[in-house]
Amino acid sequence: MPMTDNPAALALWMQLHDSAFPAGRMVHSNGFEEWLALHPCARGAEIEVCALDYLTFAVATLDATVTAAAWRATPSMVTLCELDTVLTSYKLTGNARSASQTAGRQLAVTAQQVGLCSSDGYLTAVIAGSTPGNLAVVEGAVQAAIGVSVHTAVLGSLRSALAAVLSAAVRLGRLGPLEAQRIQVRSVEGVVALADAACSRPLEEMASTTMQLEIAGMRHENRSQRLFAS
Image (tube, rainbow, N blue to C red; front, side, top):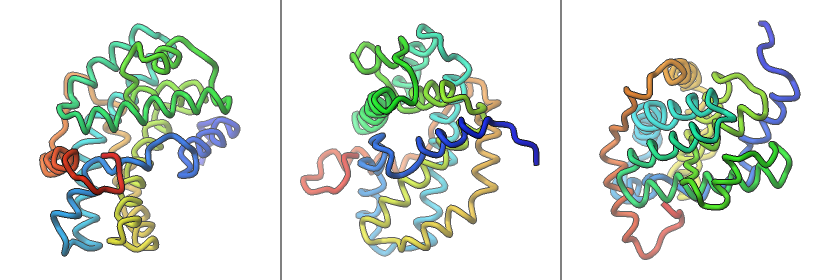
């Protein structure tokens, strides 16, 4: 198989998507914690269906599409900020906006502090709070700066999103760590196909249709005891 990405860029890309990288992804369940509370009998198969629905009908059709657009727009600060504004308009709840923007700002800060990318205009604006800093836009900009291809960038973002919700189920004691890994192995071809589609999807066709998790996310905002921020 031909190498399409620079090996050094791939190494940095793997570091970026490592669960130990302090990007703020793992403090959010994106409504999954509340969904699990509302479905106390849900175990492996049901959790897998919910996680893949979230990836297919929310992340891939909205956030991953924006990540591809942001990768192509980098380093244009104007276009990246416009994408930020557009994506924010699709985040209809405070829970969704908070999860997207706090993780995005944390990623921008960490990427600059560890030297993954230079202090460019867009990331500086995110850190200063001059633009929302949605995670999908920041991920696109950072991965473009690293030097991986747009498909690799989107694939990494999708894989990290799936790993994050499965990790939430593991940490809440509802899914075993090996089963979480099996789900990711079983779904790999589907995730690659989602990345293909996201890279070619026009922004005009963006959508998010995971009502169960969106409602769960809104309920989660009012929960007094919770493990995750969203």
